[in-house]
Length: 150
Image (tube, rainbow, N blue to C red; front, top):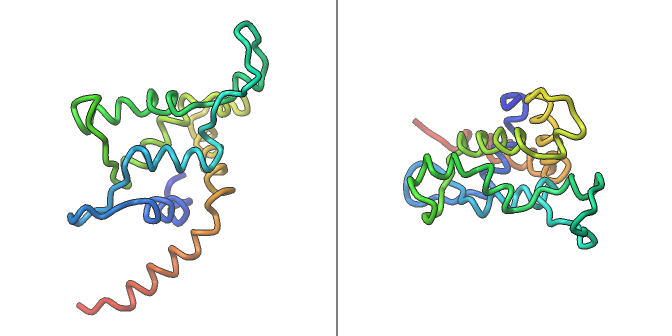
């Protein structure tokens, strides 16, 4: 799943990550959440939601708080506490997609229970929003490789 979508996923990570003077690129948790929000994976609850009302529209939203809850195991593993901001490597970013796919109500409602199918749903949402940066990233890599002299 990740291999076949490497161009897209790596491009998203590359575009949103920062280089903190170490060798590897890192993405802060807030940026991951913003990527999910832009792709329509994270959203705010509907304004017309009432206390006792339970309909399909109200069940499908996934808030920033839900996202942080889903990412908490990753966050605690990386920082050891809840207060410190997490920085995610590319592998952590991919793992965050798994954590979100496992609990997102849109995945559960529209698809069977297979994690692979849920990941496909998440990646399709990312592709519909960020598909255009895939080509720019591949072009950047090719240009970068051409400039290297060993």
